[in-house]
Length: 172
Image (cartoon, rainbow, N blue to C red):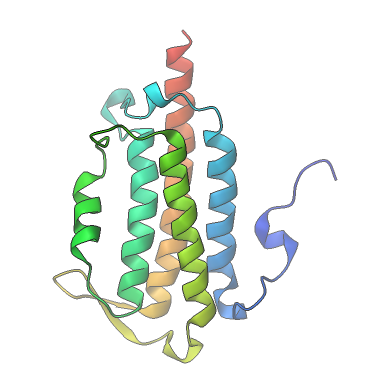
């Protein structure tokens, strides 16, 4: 095979319950795609918003932030002040300026933390109620974990399109 198999096609991941394999597979697939797609991406284009849409930098921040927040809710915990600060920062560059590697590494670390949490998640808790946000919107552990996976993949797609557009526009 000349093409690399997608993560889900490579078989089960060790120490993760079969019910949670799709979540882990999606997060690892997202990581591989982001690492590959952001390689050699120009830092000068991180905050460009084509047609007023979200920037590549926003997507990278948001991917990490949502994964962190949703997995926190899945543990039945509230958000920390640090998490609220990261949420408020989404879409903005750091004072010292982020590099592409900074934002990709942040996402990679968040995926690592998510995988650890998946490994220790008791599947008996999957249908358990979890309140989301200050309003305590209703969800379940499995609902949150699944949402984290699908939301991640949705933003990976948006990131890839945005990055391609701003790189093309930069070369015109």
